[in-house]
Image (cartoon, rainbow, N blue to C red; front, side):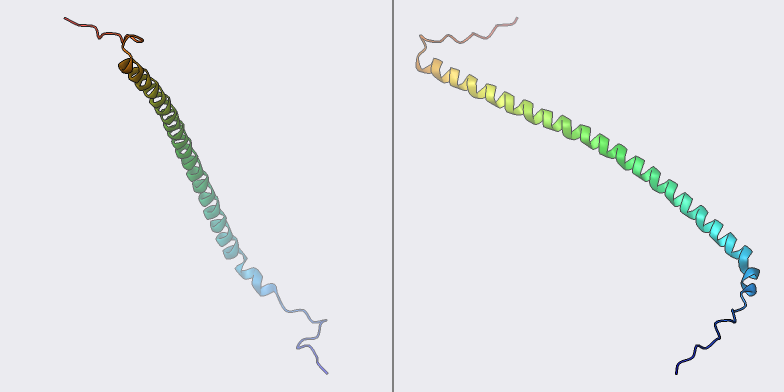
Length: 103
């Protein structure tokens, strides 16, 4: 039959652990301080990355606006070319404006 190594009524002497308590508290305080510093550093890094993200978002929005403007200009050029082709095919139908002379 199996028997435990110690009788359950006898508790181990744990008073020896109290001698090391101040050292444990110091290590824990240092660890906590390190965690707080790391937490603050990570919060700062998150702020930096958020600012970079906002800046990149602005650039992307500007780029999207330029793409839209380019498409609009391409459509205008297409219409002008069609008008020019019509004018060239039947000059009586269409009169192109003459460039102004300077000087």
